[in-house]
Amino acid sequence: MSVKEFFQIKELPFNNAPDLKYYYSSKPHQETLTRLRHVIENRKGFALVTGQIGTGKTTLARLLFEELDPQLYETVLMIVVHSEITSEWILKKICTQMEVENIPSDKPGMLTALYKRLYELNEKGKKAVILIDEAQMLKHRDIMEEIRGILNFEDESGKLLTFIFFGLPELENNLSMDEPLKQRVALKCELKQLDFESTKNYIMHRIKVSGAKYNFFADDAYRSIFEASVGIPRVINTICDNAMFESYLIKEKVIKKETVDQVANDLGLLAL
Image 1: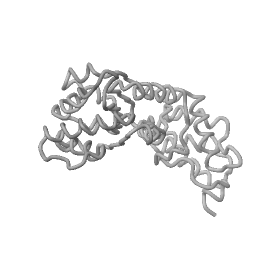
Image 2: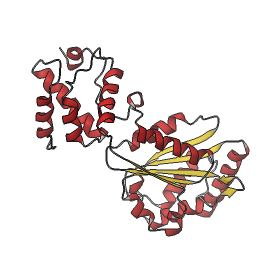
Image 3: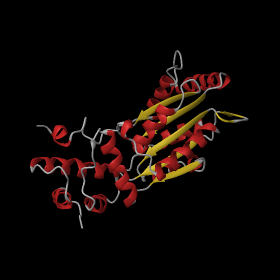
C-alpha cells in the first residue's frame, strides 16, 4: 500500500513544485497580485516583488503569467538561472520572446527593433509585460542600465513595456548599482511569511485539493508545523510531506503533534 492509498488521496499534496492548482490565496499574496495588476494595467513600467526563499515568489510569477489574457497582453516569463548573463544576452532574449523579427546583431539595432515591436503591440491594444523570476541573479551594472534604457520607451499613456522582478531581498541592493533605475520602481512588494491561521488554512487547502476525504493532521499538530516552519510555505510543505510518510510507516491515519515534532527535529528545525 502506497502513501496515497493509505491516506486515500489522488496525489501527494505537499510537493514543492509550483503546481498552480495547489495555490492558496493568502491575504498577502492576493494583495500583491492586486497591486501588480494595477501596475500592468496602467503601464507603470517597473515593479519589484521580494521575499525570503520559499515564500511563494515563483508561484506568484507563474500565476500572473497564466492569468494575463494573451489577447490583451504579450507576456513573457523569464527565469534567471545564473549570474553571468550579459546585457547583450538579456536584450536578445527580450527581443526573441517579444517576437521581434530579424533581430539585428548589434545592440543599437536590437533596441530599435524592440522599440518598433513594442510600438506595434501598443497600436494593436496589447500591453507588453516581462516577468523575471530569480531576478537577484542580475548582478551586472550594464544589465540595469539596459533595463533603464528600455523603460524610456513610452508614449503619453505610459511605458511600452512593464518589467516585474521577483527575487530575494538582495535584489534591492543590486538595483543600487543604477540609482536612476532604482528611482523608477513604481511598486515594491515584500512577501511575508504566513501567520498561524493562514498556515493552517494553507495545509487544509492542499489536503482538500489532493482529493482527501478528511484532514489527516491532528488539531495540535498545526501549531507545531507553524512554529517549525515560521510560516514559510516551502518549509511547511517539507514538514508535512515528511510527517505524512512517517505516519504512514507507523500506520497512523491521523498525524500527531509528536510525529511533526520529530520530523522537524530531524530536519534541523525548531519545533516547540
